[in-house]
Length: 318
Image (tube, rainbow, N blue to C red; front, side):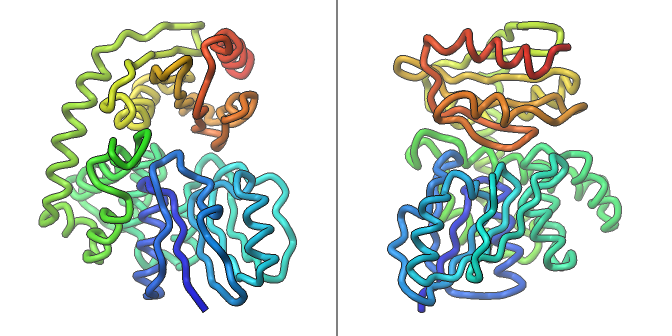
């Protein structure tokens, strides 16, 4: 019997796993990657009685591989908030999936554990741009304003670290960052003592300044688009910048495009005031996916850019 922890490398995936392993310590093989590396089950050669915990990756995007590992006799527990499609009925699959736009995977795990390690769930909610939910939980937990802001900064920095074309674009690999964070029961202690936090905070500040200097193109009263150049800093900051501009203009949907060869990488954000529609826009394109409030397209061809503009205007008519 082998154990696998399979998780998205962003704040939500990492903090979801941290909560579970603080509650249920287990030595497991870690399987992760950059934010958009979500077809993680294809890396696993499953055997009978293997135990897999999957966090913050779309079941729908891993449907064929899930069937393969279940057929091999593995047992799978799945926590997620992304578009899942039809959830298979199988005795060896336990699915905790909630696609409500107000949820993230770490909040699902927090609910599953009865709030035992809630500060990590708060970090993840901030990282996933669920500021209202994060601040409500922080207030209910009795955190001070200063402590809440520290958790917010940490969530943003962990999430920022996940974005890139490959691990080489990142400041820390998601596996190394998880192992370092696992040394701290309390995220506030990591803020005080973890040198990685100071380094991520500094790097994020540099990259976000570059993103802020790029002009926005307003497509309609309800939609806007920003294009970033084909640079490592663009790939690193695209998600955090999309979250920041969504917070700044909560009534507006946004597409943040990063230039690539013969196309773009796209991060979509639905209006925070009405957080629905992002995934329905993204899945119009072959490499698109995500959730109602936030989604992405791994490769948008140059010729498909007008179609994206039309899809946004249709989804968010203003």
